Image (spheres, rainbow, N blue to C red):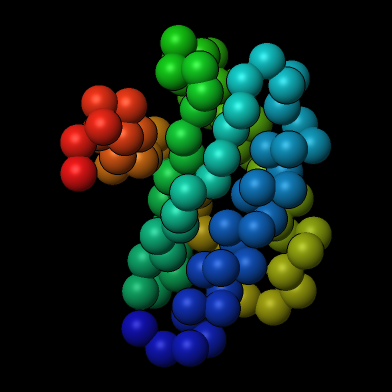
Length: 106
């Protein structure tokens, strides 16, 4: 992966966090944990964690309804280059790490 691709990926991660912070209803803590931008930059997966976990379905429903608004938000911030198709997913690795921490397992 080249430096330009990594910078673009990090910038889109920041945009996702900004959008979610601005648009969410604040009933839960939503954190953008990572972003995976395809090599051809035509698709991007945004991984999130949600606390409390009982709000995951509601948050995912909210984000799926907001996909076109999020894409327009990204389009307004990025002047050059294609805008990928976005997918939001729960970061299962983050959930597992949190559960291990809760158990006190090292």
